[in-house]
Length: 378
Ligand code: FES
Ligand SMILES: [Fe+2]
Image 1 (tube, rainbow, N blue to C red):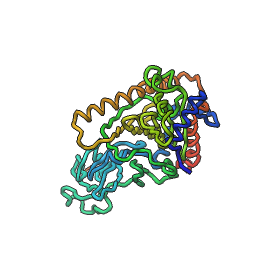
Image 2: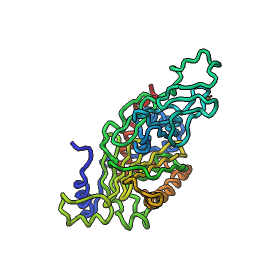
Image 3: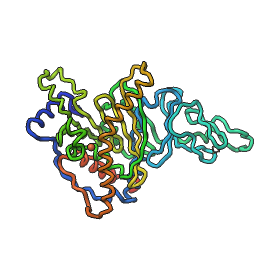
Image 4: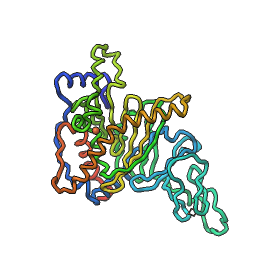
């Protein structure tokens, strides 16, 4: 059986919802204890979980050429992922084997990782290649002092997944169709930080129940309130947000209907990656939890480029894409920041998720499932 509905099936389901004034519903409602958004213990358990599952690090095209690397913190661990000489990937803990200095920051392209402190140098495969004045280290075994690798790094359908420590499960990868379209390139990257729990913003992307009240002047005039197709697969989910212009497909024969530009597909790649397929670009956003109430975001925007774009073309694409993604995002972030602040009121021992919020319930239930065989319980 197919993991997800076809575009044709999604369009049909949306028409039925429009005609009947309905939306997809889950079987269950859910009460999430609010302590899960503030507790240090819970936060530490979630970090442990992120270290023991394959999770999305970046789109593959963000590390296209040999020597391209991205260095950042994942689940609290500073790491480097680099495209090696054989076009494979290597993932290391970002610490020199001499006295622990970070070897790289941000993103770039290199042929050797040279430590900025005393100059120890490592190849793209992590092997220790050079130690200045090595006569001072008569017992140093180069073969045991390469960069320390993560448990694994892999690429599946255009996404790079890393697993920092021994996995407890295949996580997102147990059931993961291709979500990134082929032939897309990165034309913009960004990062920013917000003062709220990492799960709150992901939840805001997983339901359309808030479209009219939150996005009354931005999304609602072009979309629908509380009208979504919601699918779950393995640990992951997809929520489809239709635009009103989907009506133009009513008179098109089913086999000729093209869904592009008529819906936004939003995927939760379990647990902390959001992939949004928008009309003119694709956004990949990864949440890096910093504390129970602070989250750092890494975003990649991808589009169809033919390689002949001028700097002005790219700048225009960036401006357009930022306008499309950021307008709604700013409204969501403003709401979510108020929720995080509101947790201090002590009013709620739990939040109530309804049947329209099926994908959030799925995310919460999956977290509970994994928590039961959490590495911290071993
Ligand atoms: S800490 Fe890297 S060479 Fe000394
Ligand atoms: Fe929203």
